[in-house]
Image (tube, rainbow over all chains, first blue to last red; front, side, top):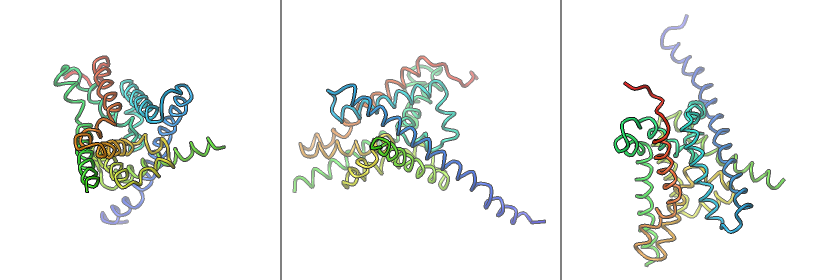
Amino acid sequence: MMNKEEYKKHVSKTCPKTKELRTMILAFLVGGTICMIGEGFNDLYTEVIPTFNSIQVSQLVTITMIFLGSLFTALGLYDKLGRHAGAGSIIPITGFANSVVSPAVEFNREGLFYGIMSNMFVVAGPVIVSGVAWSVIVGIIYFIIGAV
Amino acid sequence: MEIFLMYLRVFVTGGLFCLLGQILINKTKMTSARILVFFLSIGVILEATGAWIYVEGFGGSGATIPIVGFGANLARGAIHGAKIGILPALTMGLESVAGGLTAVIIFGLIFGLIVKSRTKKM
């Protein structure tokens, strides 16, 4: 027989590691696959719309991936994927779309203003605020470097 | 063969970013908002230091589809704007991600309006 402490040690040694490894592998596979889908659209748009330059193509790919992330969130499939894939579904841009659409759908019966429009940014808000703050900091630093 | 190798690089690069994120979640119990902000910041720093071009050159969409690419885009816009003047230095970061932001907001609004909430009414 082992006492409580030993049992705890035993559990922390064996149980979570296999689970952690599983989540890591799934995150890698799902994240990589989503990026490959993006690359597929990139190749497709480059081929189909020759008038677009590479920046416009990559912008269109981003919008496409955001649309797909939103659609699968609305269908309830993205959150199912997220339960298994973890970071593999959070870090791609589709996960950013999911973080906006998911609360928008969840709270929509509280009305347009306080339901959809304000809850859309519960997760995306910090991302957008920190992104704008970063861009201003980088802009100012590069402006000063360029001036001297 | 060439195209197969490109897709493999995309897969590995994108996968590695997500693997790194999953390790962070497992070890620190970070929430998804923190994870997103963390990786956005990595993208900003990589672009600002000039390292991003190599990451994107290697990984293609594996680098641009994760949120790090969003951060890199922000910084690239700001750096580009800084060459023009102080006002573009402040505004062009947001301008470069305007497409993605607009898409997120509009699709959020549309799907929020047309899809029924799955959580039951209280």
